[in-house]
Image 1 (tube, helix red, strand yellow):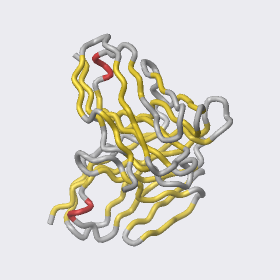
Image 2 (tube, rainbow over the protein chains, first blue to last red):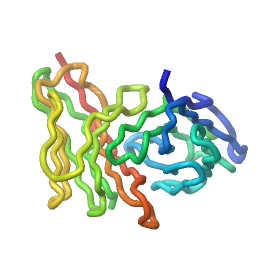
Image 3 (tube, rainbow over the protein chains, first blue to last red):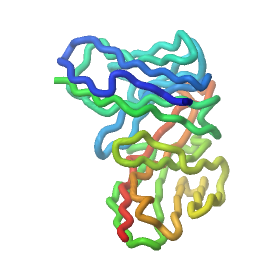
Length: 114
Length: 116
């Protein structure tokens, strides 16, 4: 089944404890992206990747790192999480760029930082 | 000022009504314009995308873009209870270096409820 998977789905952690949220797609998509969703703010793009080894900042990259070493995986790293990073995170992928291509979203990861 | 502004609603309409959802934007470099639908506890799904000014129709949905006014709309005809969801507009712009189109900016989302 073609899909985008994220792990973990739910995570409660404490301030400063490094964590990684994994994202994987099995559709051979070139484009992948991370978003966070907060009430009243909609979706905001954190980082995106046009292809392997090519990453770029979205609107809210501060406090996050990403890497794209292989096509299928695009992990999101929080080196020192803070409470303001408590949010619902979505990973998405698209065949090529996102101009005229549909993005497929993962199920989301709900992160709470205490 | 946010680059993309969308009235969050909530919007409540009776079944069969015509729904109009709107977004304004300030960045004239935005190229592609999209509407996503998001059901509760799910990821967004693409409804429609457009590139140029004008109208695009798909079944009960019509997307309208007016680049000169920096304004986009989504119309839903004969609305159904199954249309109850959050609707997000989204726009594609260039990265900081201007070398690619991959940066996606969303509106805040409008919560729509269609009651029987």
